[in-house]
Image (cartoon, rainbow, N blue to C red; front, side, top):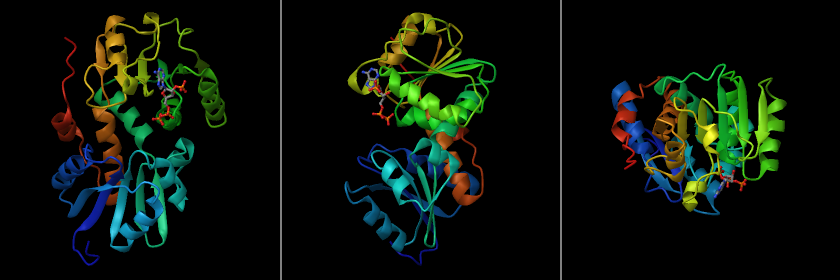
Length: 281
Ligand code: ATR
């Protein structure tokens, strides 16, 4: 890489990284907003993340997106953590300014933007259910609480982990938030988001049918995995609105792009281009 290059350089780092759609998304944003920049994929070196970032900065990298398994190491590497990064305990976007490393986590707010704007499902006054208590859900908590749902429930197989997240959120927010087991979910929710990694194991969180509602939104945070066990569960429970996380991916990218470049791209074209129809047959 050439530090004197006229083109500003950005990249996504992860391992594996071949699957990443971020270069396509940022390429579309850059073309639409007339930004002179390059955005590439970098395969992260396991156990050597900080040194690799030092090297990339030394050759002129301006900012990076960070994906699995480096979000915690990026948190440790940052010199300036945003509120979203602190609350998530993880980082998905970095901006390099001299010796300073600014860090953000746009996953949660990207998810909220996708649900509320793209799927036209405002959460204010609604019953909202987050499934899981790992990093994905932790990052979503405060952005969800700020939408002022009537009730925000965090349900997890290991209830103690959901309770820990709820206790943490209560120190930050006055939202009506509760922890639950799956079997105790007896009333229908307006929005249910699967933030567990159960589908990686061909499994769905054991949510009773009664938690789904016909007009509610069933949202799989993962993207492009087709009819996952969670989405099939939603369908079996009678839900009609089942979506995956393509919009979350694009919305978090748009927030990073705006943070780096000072211009807000439209997300419509990228979402359209990356959407893979879910086949429920
Ligand atoms: P991430 O950082 O990607 O969110 P994580 O911290 O490993 O990953 O969290 C994974 C989440 O998926 C947890 O909530 C986990 O439930 P437990 O806390 O009870 O382990 C959940 N999970 C994983 N496999 C699951 C399964 N087969 N059924 C239900 N929940 C599952």
